[in-house]
Each structure stands twice: as structure tokens, then as C-alpha cells.
Image 1 (tube, helix red, strand yellow):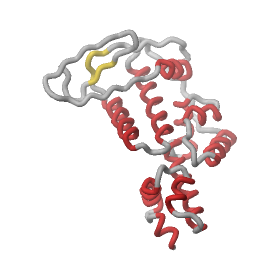
Image 2 (cartoon, helix red, strand yellow):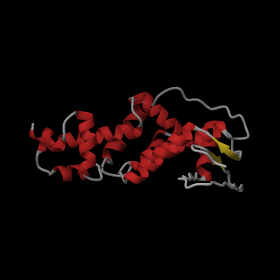
Image 3 (cartoon, rainbow, N blue to C red):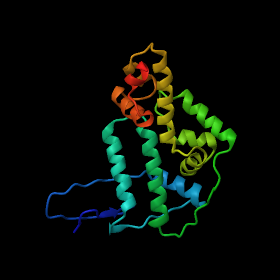
Image 4 (cartoon, rainbow, N blue to C red):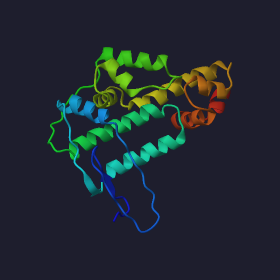
Length: 217
């Protein structure tokens, strides 16, 4: 019988049954097997993986990632793909390290991005701030796995890729608002926000003032 916070881990070709005696809320997270294989090959230098089935476990990190993915999906925010891919890669690594049949030794890359890598990534992001950015594409530019790219990017900038993109969008919005030629709603779309309220929230969080107040100052 399942209790609050319990979860089951069901690898491919395995089945699982559960029962409950009252109404409950259930969340299902399905990871592509290729995502697990790619992370296993890049991080642990192995070409085969085997996750173990668990009928009932309690893992706070899996729960946190699941809730974050659910909240992001329900928010319908532009930029959610980059955020979601970061979370799913972290989940894949966590599962491989803690719920597999082998004791994998993580291949570590301790440094950040090189100046050339960082410049290429920043240029790529700034040229596409109004678009949906893809974590795999960013990692490919740096020739790193998505997992190591996120870690290296944060070491180099102090921010996750998603956080950096939001800050750059706000910085571009500041320039456009100072120009005074576009409505705030138009600026929001041009900078990659889904609508004006998303710009308002992030703009005020990072600058302390609303876009309207900033444009009138």
C-alpha cells in the first residue's frame, strides 16, 4: 500500500502494481531510454545501463524534480524547455548513480568553460533571446554533455543556463524600454517572454522596479 511521498521505480520491460484505499494524486515521470543511455555513456563511459525496479522508495530529490517539472509545465512559460531539460538530465544522472545495478564512477570535469566556449555560448544565446532555447544545442556548442555543460556554465557565470537567459532577456528589455518606441507588451514578446506579465515579474525581481516605472524614469 502506498503512503504519502512514496514512489515506485519501474524500468523498461518491468511492471508494477499498487493499491490505495482512498483518493490520491499520482504523478508519473517517464524518461526516454536514450536520455539515460546518453548520460551513462557521457558521464560513466559505459554503453549499457540497467536500472533496478523498486516497488516503494522515498527520495526527496526525485519528488522535488517532479514537482518542479509539473509546475513548469502548468505555467506555459517560454524558456520552459531549457529549464525542463536541465531538470530531466539531473534526474537521469541521479537515477543512474543511485538506482542502477552497477557502481558507476562519475567522470569528473572540474573546470568551467574556456573563454572561447563561453563567448560562443553567449553569442548564440543573445542572437536567439526571442526563441525557445535548447539545452542539447547549447551543450553541443561547448562539446560537452548536457549535465557537464550545466555545471561548467554555472562555474563560469554564477548562473544556470536558464537563469542567465532570463537575465539577458531583462537586460535587452531595459534597452528597448529606454528607446521608448515600443509598448511594454511588444517588448516582452521581442525579448522572449510569453506575455507582459512574465516580463513584469522577472523585470521587477531583478531590477526592483516595474517595466513601466523603468521606462518613465
